[in-house]
Image 1 (cartoon, rainbow, N blue to C red):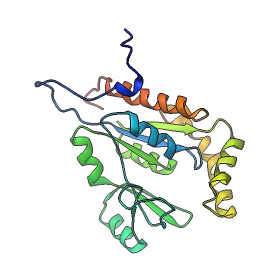
Image 2 (image 1 turned 90 degrees about the vertical axis):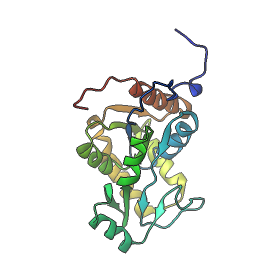
Image 3 (image 1 turned 180 degrees about the vertical axis):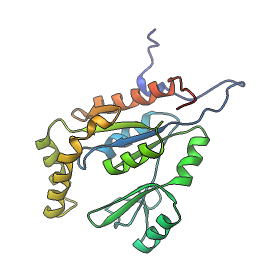
Length: 213
């Protein structure tokens, strides 16, 4: 039945007085650098109720406009290494001389509170999450074509030509691995891609989960 309500108002996690708190879903969004993951996450976060965005720890320097505790937790390498030793990350990876990690305790607390947690990760990190949490929902964001991906990376103008070449080489490999993931969303038209992502979140909230996950 068509309710007549726009997509942005659907999918809330409300319940009556007898509603039992349900464990949140762990949603992993991945894809090559420059594909537009951050922009898509911003759109989905603005229109899906009950979804929280994971904040990663990184050793890289902040880019213009990035905010501590919202964009990333910015830490030096010694602090990051100590967190690795204490097993405080769900996943972590190093790329182009910088480290990135997902804080385990924060994510688990959000899931137990019934929130869906959205992780925006590199492909390597997404594979780590999947190995630890088989019930995680894995979504691969693809570009419409490789030339478009290269244009987007160069248009960002945030990295040197050498790093861009490294990212493009890595992207070729990552695009070969997309079949490992459960969903693929092609980021051609931004609104269509954002709506597809939101529908995946809503559908997964309705999935009947077995005791095996």
